Length: 408
Image 1 (cartoon, rainbow, N blue to C red):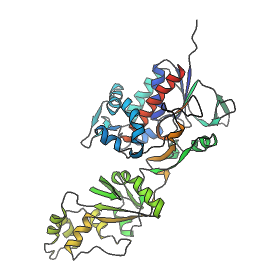
Image 2: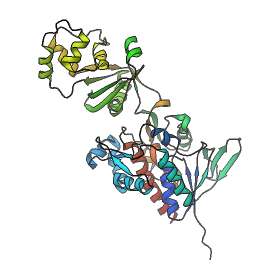
Image 3: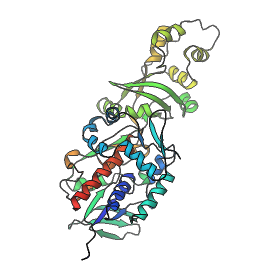
Image 4: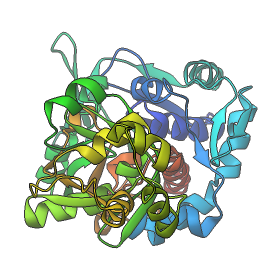
């Protein structure tokens, strides 16, 4: 007797959707991946332009702390498909991984494209079907998935199980525009509003900072916002700041702006020098040296850091060049006034998403049995450093396991 093969629809051809497709196809299910773009993995490829950061070698407690409020509920999924297992998967595709000195893990090619090509070959061998230019816009009254094609044609699909892996709303031109939030809210599913995460912040720079120092890095700084602190690098932009330390403080900056309309962070420009040593160095006579030369030699500051130090602050006070004690204090605790967050169109990721209360432990929508969710559609956020992709992969593996249980 012929056994009917169960069908699985995956909406979204990013890393979450592709990983779930692989896990389901390995079990013999008929898997079709639908995506509104012409080819899969568009944002995944963008993420790999500067080196595809897959995961991180942090110890579990430190790793999970990066997810803040979501760490407790995410932990079982990341434990189920851990950073080590992600590295094994990458190695199995012929793209050996390595950990850098910072603990970040990359494929040795340092690119996303070879990994994606190898992955798509594997999925093809497993029989996964791809349907491009399929824009999902909800369910009809019978529960069928409704797709709109590029030519305007409407298509209805009624699979045995569905995974939504539509991403957040950052870089919408690559496919994830957050339009699914309206669809789910109309179906009675609570969604926390999407906001830019791992995004630049807006600072009212002088013309000098905009024209001469945009693109310059302020390296090896400690940044503080409220009770939170981060170490790393900040990049000056024409509109403000980007970079790892800014992204790490993103949730705190965003909350301050929501309450006060502005946020304040402080930078320690010489985190490696104690205050008393820096004060001692700045107490030596300047002689005929210019302020910039003196700050470079005495405090070891790069030109961009010197310009940042000299920048007139929003309070109207200038750097106290004649008082070494106050100058050292300012170098160790330089205030930066932030008046906004850059938009979603260039954010690395998004905060917000489907509320945890709407899901069961297998990441199935409670009021849509047979519909599962994974990746950035869920309400969590994390800084860059490998934490974003790890959670996308881990939740998709968990959702695929839930889908298999449901089908059985």
